[in-house]
Amino acid sequence: MPRPFSDHARGVFVSVDGPSGAGKSTIVHHLAQLLVADGEDVHVTAEPSGGPIGMLCRELTETITGHALACLYAADRYHHLEVEVRPSIQAGRVVISDRYIPSALVMQRFDGIDPAFLWHLNAEADRPDLAVILEADPEVISERLRERGPHNRFQLTPGSSHAEVDFYRQATELLIHAGFDVLRVDCNQRPPEQSAALIRDRLMTSLPAERREEIHDPRGGAGPATLTTAGHQG
Ligand SMILES: Nc1ncnc2c1ncn2[C@@H]1O[C@H](COP(=O)(O)OP(=O)(O)O)[C@@H](O)[C@H]1O
Ligand SMILES: Cc1cn([C@H]2C[C@H](O)[C@@H](COP(=O)(O)OP(=O)(O)O)O2)c(=O)[nH]c1=O
Image (tube, rainbow, N blue to C red):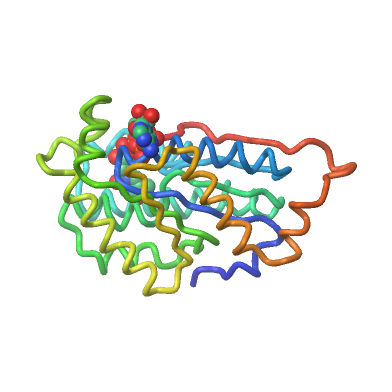
């Protein structure tokens, strides 16, 4: 079962998902900067991870489909948790992952996979302390994607942004129903810096009191806040 917040030694785990072009990578970057300015040690990571299974995901997403690809992404997630995410959380860092479980509940739907299968496949992955879902209208994101060009085969299907937004809506409902702490952020009009500030503020209010006090304390002899970044950001 996913571990509750109180099991984390000191750190915090935040995931950021949302349709391609919604602004995940940009917002993750700004959020990390804000948290470092607050004195936090921050570790920015992404899925697929920079590890060996993540590399396979990147290599094979164009050629492997369906259940096999869903299992490959889930394998990467469990390995990523074990070797990178949990150790960082246990070291007291704020870990921000650009894509996590919600992306799996959405992207593999493009290959027609049953949401119940995707849910069970990911059921043992740690629950983030905060699951951020970026929301934007299909017209807004498809325009951004047109400008930058397609990143993957999912984006080549006509109307893919509409389907993706719809899949995210369903996934978000599922996550909320399962008790995830979900923060939906409307990214249609809001500049990415503002979205990042909103997430940071929400993070502060949902942290246990003793952790909030630590953040607001001057670091004293603790040394400067650090920002580490895993390879292969999205
Ligand atoms: N709120 C926003 N308003 C306008 N442009 C944005 C906004 N957020 C992101 N962008 C732009 O949209 C593009 C996609 O952003 P990116 O962060 O790569 O999205 P994602 O990681 O979700 O695919 C980038 O060119 C980025 O500068
Ligand atoms: C985490 C995850 C990613 N993916 C896919 C979606 C993207 O095609 C790719 C992530 O690449 P990324 O570089 O983040 O894509 P983008 O810039 O478009 O956001 O991996 C899945 O299919 N399932 C998953 O569980």
